[in-house]
Length: 79
Image (cartoon, rainbow, N blue to C red; front, side, top):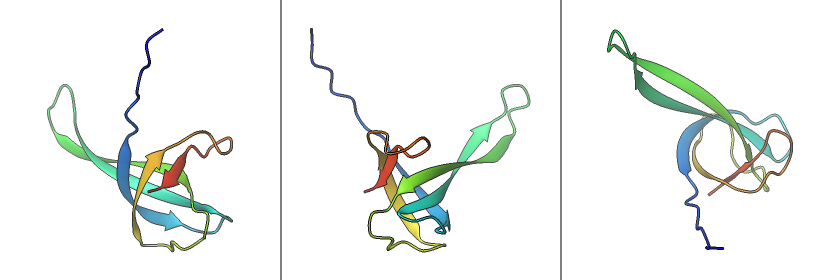
């Protein structure tokens, strides 16, 4: 078997919720193009991110990366 090194993606976004314990919700905005009409539109995806020290608050800009699954919905941690 060959060893495969998987590059973990880093994403940047803005914290939209910090109400959970050790978890923040981060919204990542991206620009997409419609396949037929070629119009550009904004798309937002939300990620639940592990925040061990509860130091990030709503409105903060954060960078996070993928990790092992921590819970059902959390598989990212603050970088």
